[in-house]
Image (cartoon, rainbow, N blue to C red; front, top):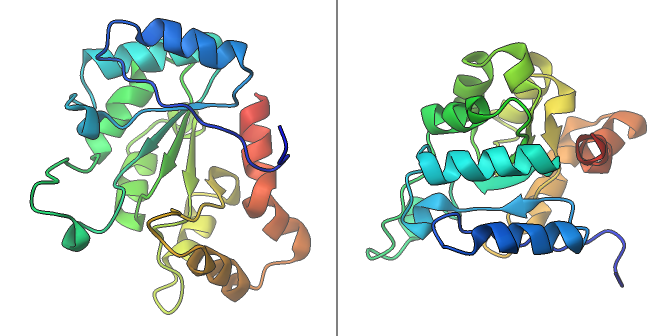
Length: 196
């Protein structure tokens, strides 16, 4: 790879006949995780195809990345009717296979709390949340979640290309964390999560 900090994350569509071959090619290429956006694929996010994909990823030790939403619903075209992931759908996927691990992007405080506090500690430990959709000051949802859910459960994310990356950087700046704690959010927690 030419850029050591950026890694490709291939999408896997478990509703297609060849999805297992796509997943195996991703593993053979050495990817650190794969992604699926079930609502955009026309699949039930908690349905059998997604649970099978979660199980296959768990068996391979490969985290599955999911986006709760891709952009604010007010900005979407009326024909873009893909639903956002719900807390019960995420909990269903986490419970589909005890080896499955998830990186969840674009989640807000309410959804994170519903999933985290509605899960067992073991289930919650298999989810890493990115910070791109979590409010910073003045609401300080991010600071609250770091205290209540735990620093180790979060990682840096920007939501690019549909969101401005400066937003996530500003949230970290406003937390005023010591350098070692900030480094956990910037990359340390993700590196640890991927190394499992």
